[in-house]
Amino acid sequence: MHTVRHVRPMRLILDLHDVSELDPINLGTLTAACALGDDHHVVVFLDHSSARIAAQLAAAGVPHQRLRHIMAVS
Image 1: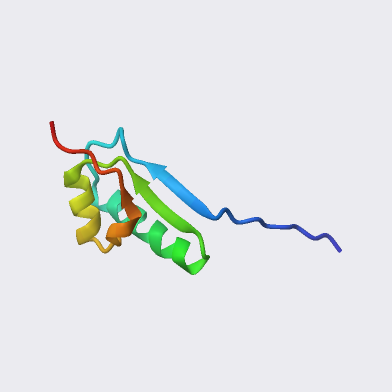
Image 2: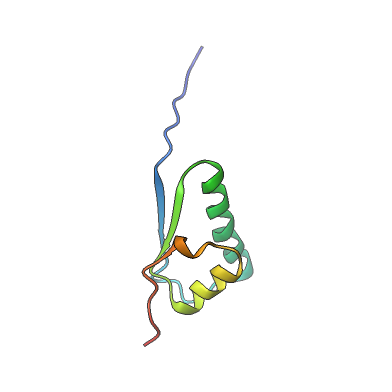
């Protein structure tokens, strides 16, 4: 018998600093990542997004507490 040990991280941090726009597929993927993380007890944070992208993510159902370090438009 061969046993494989799976170790889950406590959190997953996705840095969106270089993301200028999200198409519907990527928006859904990030939203699903948060939900999947909840199912597996892994906290998913989306860091350094623009205010516009943060608004899109929130409208898609990403909880506000997952959106950290939102960058102001300059």
